[in-house]
Amino acid sequence: MGKKRSLGDEAARELLQTEEKVYQKGSLQKLLSHEPPKKKKKKDKVKTKHETYKKLDSIDAIENVEHLVKEESEKSKTKKQNIERIKKSMQRPKIFLNQSDQIAVNMSDVQDLVQFACIGAISSAQPKWCKLLRVAKVCKVAVVIVSGINERWFTQYSHCFTNMQQLFNLSVKVHPVDNSDRSVYRGFLFTKWRAKRYKKELYMSKLLEKEPDLPTHNESDDASDEEDTKPTRSDYVLTEEEMRWHGYPTPDRPGFISTKHADTISDASPLIAIDCEMSMTHNGQELTRVSVVNEKLEVLYDTLVKPYNKIVDYCTKYSGITKELLNPVTTRLEDVQKKLLKLIPPDAILVGQSLNGDLMALKMYHPHCIDTSDLFTNKYRVGLKILTKHYLKRDIQCSKSGHDSTEDAQASMELFLLKLKKGSKLEDFSYKKSRVLPIESIFQRVATESKSSVLIDVPSNLKKFSKDPVNCITAMTDAETTKRMKQVVRDKYDLICGHLHSFKTLMDGITHEQHTIESTLANVDRRVSDIYAAVPDNSLFVVLLASGIQGLDNLDTGFTEKDLYSRCFAGIKYAKEPDAGT
Image 1 (cartoon, rainbow, N blue to C red):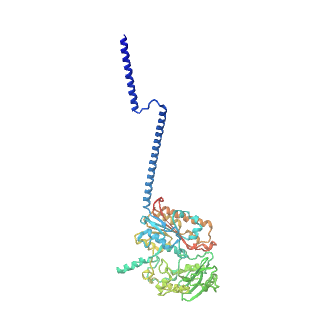
Image 2: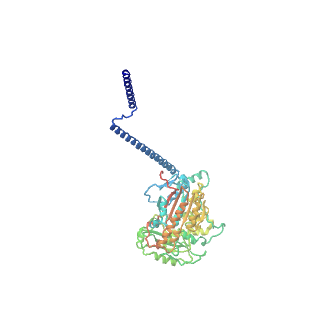
Image 3: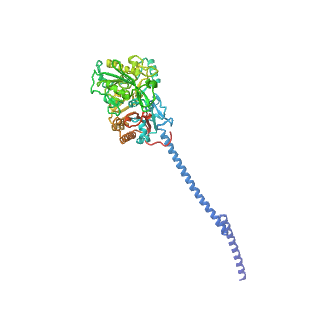
């Protein structure tokens, strides 16, 4: 029994030792597997806390990276969009001023812009006052001419032109051609050849032994087909509509007198030629000399006239008037008017070169007038000096001391008598036989490069272009002109011109109420906006406010320099303005 117990004790001891080794081995394995020891509880808590912070920092870092990636992605997307905008804008034309402080431009500068936009670099000249980029991308050119609105009206009623000021990025004053509204309208539609082009044409024609290809005028639609038909004096008298559109005084104009005229004239009606000289005062151009001759070239009346207003420029180079000449003069405008009313017979026909200017200076209305300035062209005006040299074979206006109104009146009378005597047998004036630069319409110019044009206006203006390469569409009112322009801008025309004249018609009237003026100007602005909206994208749109001094006498306001200036708006029509690029 004792031995058995001792053997059992040894066995138990060995078993305990084996278990202890197994336990120790297991602990070592746990240590090797980085399992934290069960003891040292404080250090375990600190270590666990640090690991938690590390995990949180890792999460924040991941979120930051995701945010940065998203931000970079958005930047990349924006950059691509900007690149697309730039590419898109590079496919569009753009126009801007060469100088931000541009004061005023000439009418020829506006013509250069329109021609350059229509026919590109092959035009006679590129515009110097503005820059038109990517001209080949210009879809078409639309021009709206608004008669009667000068710089003064625009400045005084600028609140009525909100659409024009918003739509166009170019807005400049245009130097006056002269005081006639007609001259601005015609001055834009007719352009002189450049000397370089003229010389080149003459050289090539001589080289090829052929006639030079120079522009010729159009014959009047109502001209007689029979060569031997002798015209009468009344055949050359301007119609009432022609006088109105050529800027002649109207019978109801305040401050003007009317001759005691007869309603009808005949071939026996006497011819009276009138020529005036003017000087510049604070109230504009005023009469300083008048000469009257009969058809026998006898001087009926010739006198100097002293204006009431102070003279600021005697214009001696053209008028021949000096301070010394006028100092002793006591004759006033009303004295001249009284004399002419007695001198001019009721059935007299007045003859003169640009006679509308003379009658405006005299402040006198007469219904029977013949104008020699366009008598030999039926289209555009030619200077008296050129006509006298061409037809009468003599030189006038050669004195350095200025023009002689008696000499000019006699030359006008001689020119008409020659026209009356020879009629259609007398060759019309042509630049082919003159040494001055040829004049052509803007429609003729663009047609040389196979570009099509359309003109929308009243019949009295359209007839001057009846045989030009332009489609003439009649419109009697501004509403009709707007409607026609909105229709034709979608057709295959390269140049579209329209004429709005409601404001000029208003100013030709008697009363000018403030609200009527404002509503008329606002309507003009709205019509321009309507036409602009109908024009295709990438088109050049030009608005020319044609200067005119009509209506000033009714407003009790002084004549200023602004009354002589016109204004031009220009811009490219976009579906949406590009945000970037040039």
